[in-house]
Amino acid sequence: MVAAMIGALAVPAVRGSAAARPGPPPGRETRGMWLASVANRDWPSRKGLSAAEQRAELLVHLDTAVRRRLNTVVLQVRPTADALWPSPYEPWAECLTGEQGRDPGWDPLGTAVEEARRRGLELHAWFNPYRVANHTDPTRLAADHPARSHPGWIVPYGGRLHYNPGLPEVRRFVQDAMLDAVARYEIDAVHWDDYFYPYPVAGESFADADAYEEYGADFASLGDWRRNNTELLVQEMGERIREVRPGVRFGISPFGVWRNFDRDPEGSRTRAGLATYDDLYADTRKWVREGLVDYICPQLYWNIGFEPADYAELVRWWSAAVRGTGVDLYVGEALYKAGDPAQPAPWQDAGELSRHLTLAGTHPEVRGHVYFSAREVSQDRAGAMARVVEDHYG
Image 1 (cartoon, rainbow, N blue to C red):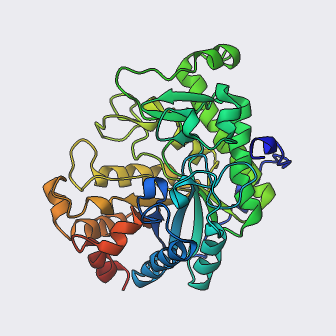
Image 2 (tube, rainbow, N blue to C red; image 1 turned 60 degrees about the vertical axis):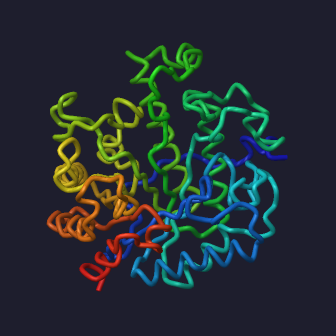
Image 3 (tube, helix red, strand yellow; image 1 turned 90 degrees about the vertical axis):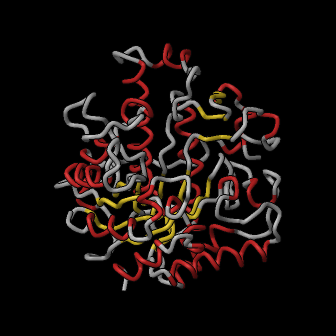
């Protein structure tokens, strides 16, 4: 049944006007947290809980957001090409019952939308476009999974299965699958994270040569073709969101470095090990400049003064990147590093994260922060979240 729905969502792609871009109320600062379901990172706490137990845990996370004086929850609803709602395109998510495709007995996304609104929270539905599985065995997918019906769509790489972004039919399908949730539920935003082409793995090549040969003739390089594939996904999805449900925002949370200055003089003064443009084939700055997104939330997961990728430098760079574009800038914050003994010394200081907000506050382009992730918002291992609330959300 799932595979039979491919291409069934007939939604015209008409580009919306940047002047009509939706947004939060004037002056409202976004205070968000990511609520990750992949591999049961935050929620549900484990596979196989009853519907009542899953629901109860979800409500605790929403209540925690309110207690921490947050106003936005970014809930991961499509973790591995499966769904946390009754989708006609993809199977029920494995993270719920432990068996992909098994009905959990309730509607997590529908409940989250209703309960978030009851608490005055925005609910941003977080989708991963191309990740199919955190393994490379298609036979472990649900029997009617589209990736099994269309084995030519998938590429094993880095110990995972990925949809091939270079295939137009894949690009259309993943949009249809995500737009089903947009059509069904009164979500406040569609949210993507940093996974487009996969992060590079030493000694491996992403096997898209056949697609490049078929579709890449007009491009000077493989990299240019891949970046165009990613841009088409972003552009088309934004257009179709505005058609399906005007007023729903579209935001993306990329890796925090567009390009290092040694590769491009317009890049940030960083020496990060990778960059979205060069390694993930995502020209994030172009999406901002052309208004393809309503907000950008770069993951600035480094401390102030970290020489290869200084938080202060990246806030400066991203503030300049969004200036005058109408695209809102939120900063993704590495709450998960606070108090982790494996992290550099600044993260052992409960005040590091609060200083991030103080510094960002000197840049008027920064309109909020989003914390990774809900488990740490609740546990607050080092007291860093409590300090943020005390210093900035009082």
